[in-house]
Structures are given as structure tokens and as C-alpha cells.
Length: 166
Image 1 (tube, rainbow, N blue to C red):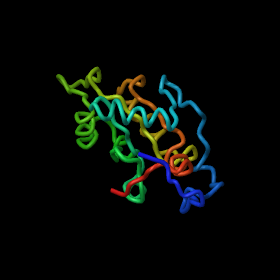
Image 2: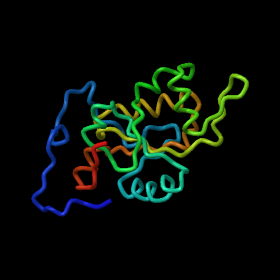
Image 3: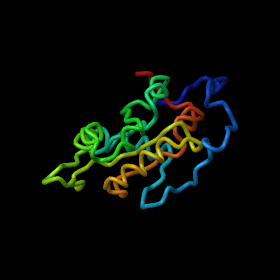
Image 4: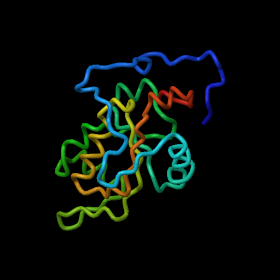
């Protein structure tokens, strides 16, 4: 992981825009609430190097696949926010919960062994990761195991950090 060294490099595509129609593209507050910690780029890099590398955490790109395919943070996995919105009874949601370490016992879900997650989307104006976090906490995922990278892909690219197209 490194920064782009070309000092003439500029952000292109959707991340170069400075304004968007609100709603739906409203700037989100610095904190989502419910004990979900907001993190920046340094924390994301440390998380990748520690929790993700040691299989204790996941960096989750909560955007729709078409956004993810245009470029994402190396080491992240794509879990679109729409899947988590389907609720705990949905088979796709259940499959994801199991992959995250949740266990179903006698019709109830246990989350004590789940991984720590950092979720992100396009930026502070994008509602995809906040919705994913809201839906995760709604189905019982412990908020203290969730973090939000508010800057998302826009801030990541603004800083010239490495991106990949899967």
C-alpha cells in the first residue's frame, strides 16, 4: 500500500464532484452513534495490517458491485448494503453472518465470536455504509465490533492511496 507519487495526479470520475443533490447524497455526521467508532485512513491501514492480516477483522466495501468494480481498497471485501437490508431471516444475510463468525443456535443468533469490521462506501456524502451499519446493529451485530471509515473512497483517492479493480 502506498501513495501515488505523481504530484500532478488528479482525482477523476465521480469523486471529483464537490456537490450533490441532497437527499439522497447528504453529508453524514462525524459519528453514526450506537457506539460505532469513526476512523480515518491511518486507522484503516493499521486495521488491514493487524486485524485483517491476522484474520480477526474485515474491511467491508458496502457499495453496490458496480461501484466496487470501478476501484476499491486493497484487502477489502464487497458486501453490498442491500444484502444486509433484507433482514436476518434472509438466506443471503445468514450466509454472510456465518462468514463473519455469527452462529445460529436454536433459532437465535450469537455474535460473541464475530469479527471486527470497518465499513466504508463512496465518502461522507454516501449513505451505503451507514445503512449497512444500521442494518447490522438492527439484526444484533455488536456495535463495538463495528467501525465506520467516513471518508470512504473519495478521501482514499484524494490522498492518492492505492486502489485496485477486482
